[in-house]
Length: 134
Image (tube, rainbow, N blue to C red):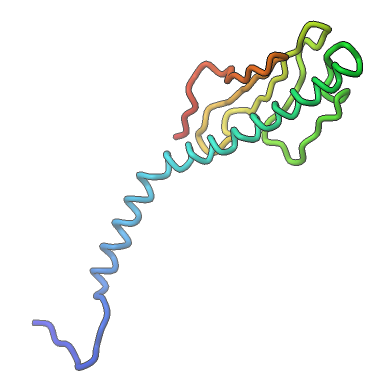
């Protein structure tokens, strides 16, 4: 038998514990998806950085009739990068710029990630395995 005093309102301790338990289960189930969404948002840095490198390479080519083979030559810099950027094969015919991040750099349990852009502005993900986060 439950006694209630006049004007007493609220939840019992058992009801509150059940709600907290349900919230814990939902949070545990949603964490891998949340990590994956966060990792994909961080990939935007690589895409943006490589697009900037492409634009700088086009300007460098217009001035020098060749693409830069060193990222410092084009003046590229981004503060607090998650990815490391470099230029491969800068020549008169083209270039490849690569953005790389080590495993775990995108978040807890995430695989490594690498992107590439070339002189024809083709942006591709180089990493063979799909992006996953545990």
